[in-house]
Length: 162
Length: 253
Image (tube, rainbow over all chains, first blue to last red; front, side, top):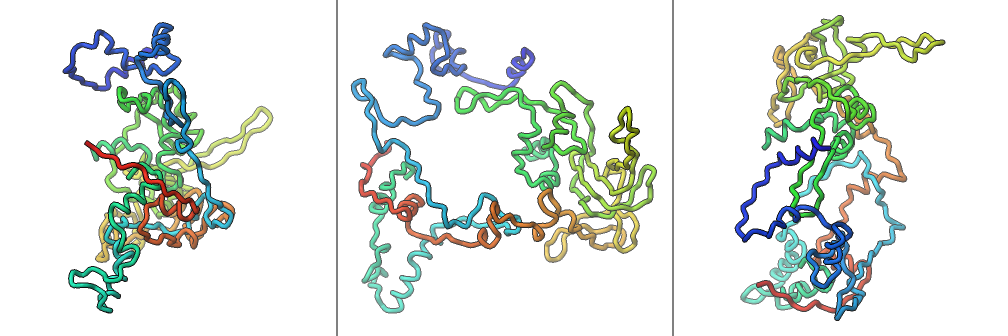
């Protein structure tokens, strides 16, 4: 084992510290001291209100929050897995080798525009249902949609990526 | 970086293709990693200490036999290989042997081992091997083919003159990449047997398993219809989930 641990020092790591010296604690930041690791004194300090390190939750998200020392559970924070009914699904775990390789280009915003709006615009133009600025006189639901409303609808899913 | 990627790649392209296994799986199955830094902590670089030199043989890298030949405790002498620009030899090719007992004979390539620049020619360049020898049983003698180096051991056969020839990769006017014999200028087509993998002889001849395989017709069907919705909105609509609460607006400063 000694040979291996000496090998790891060959991996180049160069650091410049611009802050004041870390009171000699610098090296010990390198190790992962998850909840149960460390000396008795360290763990006692971790249990006290001014803990040094955050609780390592191992990637698990909270299902609530602490309020005045008590845990409040929020039903919306509990993940819910919605599994579709696969009774009449034709898809199986593997794909047959007979299937051709599909190389598909990216679905662009212009293609989406063409699919949703272009047909309506062409028919409106032919029937003279466009005003002087080119806006429809009888707009469809998609044409009435404004950007802020569209963002609101996307956020209503509860997804936090928008 | 490209040169480094090329040089650090150990398992050959044709080997991966033949196995029908993901490249990452093959790498994981033969690699011997001794130490890996923990993931997800900023103080650790993504470093690992692993065995560097493996002895590639006729045993495929994902097999147990390969693992046994590359035991953790054993170190074997490094094999120096002549770098090959573009691979010429495929399974099913007719080749002439240039070295050994069967010098001058022609045969069909039955296996390609790119890791060692080897091809195995069916029934040629053989030796005898005694199998299953016991105290009470004398064993059975079988003929086993030895691999041949593609750099010095074999040459492709020209389909016109039926003689060994040098070969080049060239492009046809349609932009297709083909092997051309330099002697007669004839195209040497890549044989059908080169398509063979562990799962099928050729893609068209693959027998679909109705319980496990999505059939080709279903897999190629386009079910995507463009909608003015996000993926999540589409799923909520199809599952009949209704939600009319909107999260409060947030700002970035």
